[in-house]
Length: 569
Image: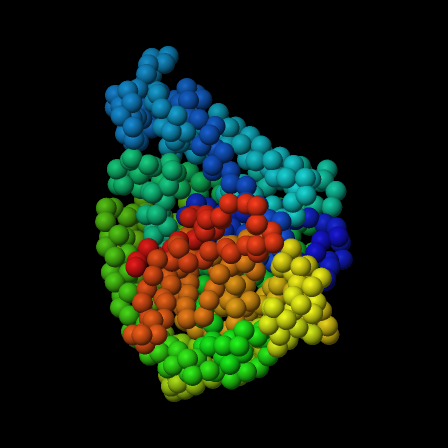
């Protein structure tokens, strides 16, 4: 049986899930995949992305080159700079093979030009289909070895490809299939994504204008063969979900399984609005000063001082962030205006195989514009120390909400005790917690574990994904650890050991390729905050009972493809 979110609730089946992405290039599939993987992993499901593009690059372009018509072969070499005597990336000379110049370095041999994606290029099509199926086999082997949710990240843009995947999965017992199609009708967003695609591994070392022209040619090849999910899949009784314009419209068909419903529910709550999720612990409480956990104590004098400084800081940050947004808009507009940006059709229903396309405007799309004065909410727990921390915010400028789900982890019969007292009075409990802080549940009625906290915060996370303006969460240590582990893609097994002292503000800014973290530290002498190097902050402090014979552990840094850290000091 599958365990939901590390807790005791269980699903009603043993089924695993394969999520198969569908959509044209530059439609946000990778954005959706990374967010979905981060969410499902945070909930406790063993989740992995299997990217077909990465495997396709390793298939090499030599076979493609040799089976390409002569005219297309020459056009391919000229467009990507391979006709030159040296590699554009490493300056290694090309070598002659069968009368053709072929890149001698491994990196260049993994590039594929637009000709590789021509639906009339039979050899290249065979390679693409085989690579997609090979990755699918890897995916199934991973599920058989204990994985729970596997994501097939590819265009899967033809009925034939999707039918082949459906047929292959029929022989696998207890594995469900869900297609997720990403459709974008906003040409400005598509043009922005195309610009970003010129920085992909396929175009390293290539002139941006040449790269963009080649990618647009690739996209036209895809459009010729693309068929959206519809009647063909419905006849096979498959489950699918269409995400249109990053969640503005969602179409769900035949969704039956528990895991599938979790995926669709999450995908319905995405947006691209610029905002910051600020997370901080409350000011120092009387129990903090005494070293006691839990309870419902009021703020100590130092906590009141912190509360006043926090309100001044957020007032200032609202103005600064508005300026940052305007500067980012200016840079993005300049980036969009650079080079030629001929338009491209939006989706298959409107695609024609012939004819010219008009240029798309480079003005900022409404979905990418940031509001200068966005709404701002402040969320606290229902405990006095968090509510007192926000007493100095102007209620006319901030919407303040008190949310029970943000209450500190409940320590059961250990509430109000110091850790020294727990070790003395409940030595077995103390040791059990040190050995497994994530799954350990405090003794007594209502005692919780970090796994319970993840379940409690699931709705909070979805609401934070849905909301379109900045939010300040004033909460507690266990809550801050759980929230930041989601936003920064930190494994939940490390979550309970994150060192998050009082007096820090963590600002997570959602961006197209992950979340960007900035951190500010309160300086009591100056009675103000200073920004510090974020990459040095989220350290893991392992219990001495576990790490006593091991060397010190370096800070845990999530994959740079998922998250990024401010290095400002």
